[in-house]
Image (cartoon, rainbow, N blue to C red; front, side, top):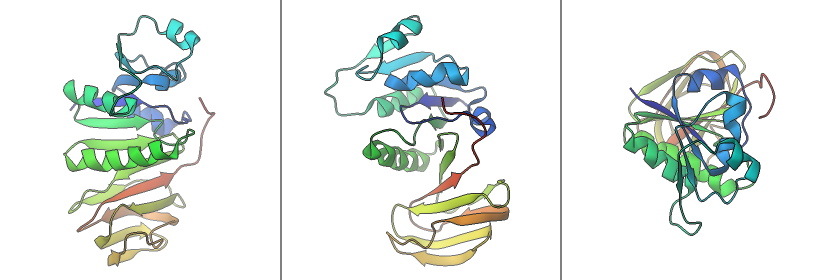
Length: 216
């Protein structure tokens, strides 16, 4: 199994959970995502993008990292190009570091939908800022999670959901229908071993963790 961490341009908080996710992973930086490398103690094997958001200091600090430069006017984001590069290198799972926050909400929504897309193709995908973690919920599987009691979570529907079951939560659900756009599955809390399954539809688990350290 080949795990790749993709450094994206959103906010990152170094936490034990984030460190565990990227431990042993190969790393690719997308454009300004390189700024997280030093604080996370990782050395990317590749740095790519159009470099329109990169400072001269960052370019100098990582001058020895192999680069792939793309034109600013292109039909893919730097993050998507980085994901494709990881897949070409044999990635079977992805950790999208810095997938939350930042000045562009459209980029965040793209990261959510990309995570679901690649999960449907059979890749393991995690989105993380350190403070928040997103995990696609593949249909027909029982997903189990070991989070402390009281941890806040939401199931974000990206379509209508059929047969949604949530166990180990303050507000459990048993094989319910969730219309697209419903707030039914927002702001729940873990109580015990969290288990979630969906029979039909596209959804993402979003977990809010207690931040352990400082922003990087």
